[in-house]
Image 1 (cartoon, chains in turn purple, brown):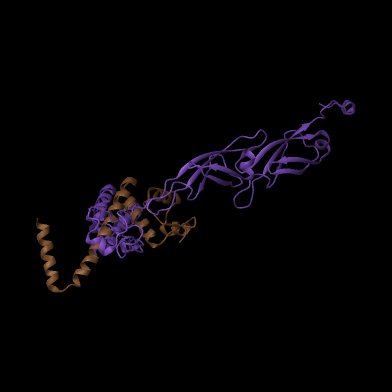
Image 2 (cartoon, helix red, strand yellow):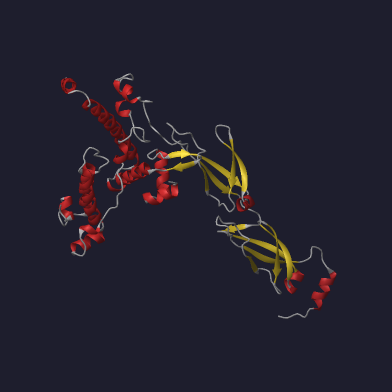
Length: 291
Length: 107
């Protein structure tokens, strides 16, 4: 057996990658054990040809071989078993087709001997079906359950996992079209659309929103209650918090599948009392003007 | 084996597997809502990869090639069984059947 990959493939040492690929394809067609189930020598030859091709098809390996740095034994294509090892011993395996004698008489000797069950054993997985589902912003963040009506009239409870994104697709295994020949059904693919929210805005797994803070807490600091996407949260407003200051609420953003969550960012807006307050006006009037 | 192990052993990306399942190139068994892969599915996945990556056969061509490979497998299986049955016959009968086959295949 030759150790020269060029000789194995039968190409010149200056052959172009394209020429090498063409030659390999021609040989592989002839030698691939699965395409030549009757050729018992094919496996060894194919292994050899594949090794040669793996070496010459990789410009870096080819250059190293040309410089004499590596030899062909350095290239081993791991291979456990070929498909043909399974395709023949039993006619009952999943993929065997009896379409090759579909035109033989139904009552012929073959069916007596082998008790053929059907004409064709074509197995085909059912097609996937696609749906679209619109979700409110908070349902997408917090998770929800939605009833989806399938084309055949049946309904399906779809569990929306918390934190789902706009444009994400949920795959419901085996809820698509039925399969043929005992093959499994397809999947139902549900494309999720998330409607915008008047207050909350999502960026990645973080939530951004604005929150009014009374003048007293803005000036003196204190605790206020804010409504985060998952519900009310009490936050501490530091002394001298002016409008535009952003507080980070760690872990109050969008839940992630691994159990952690993004953060919520609250932008504070100082809010004056709803009605004019004469006392406040007096206090501010007495407050010295500084420029 | 489950899908995760299958993907790892077949060195396959999930989206590629998805296409093969959708086109019926791969038909693992499906029980209790889960795909179950066995060794033959693994060997078949490698064959599909050889056909696509090394032999340049496109997605549409794969189904044709696999169908023919499966037909040849089925025919070989039946032919082998017939030949085994023939070999068990007495010499005279074997010779008679062989002559008969030869005569028929000439017409």
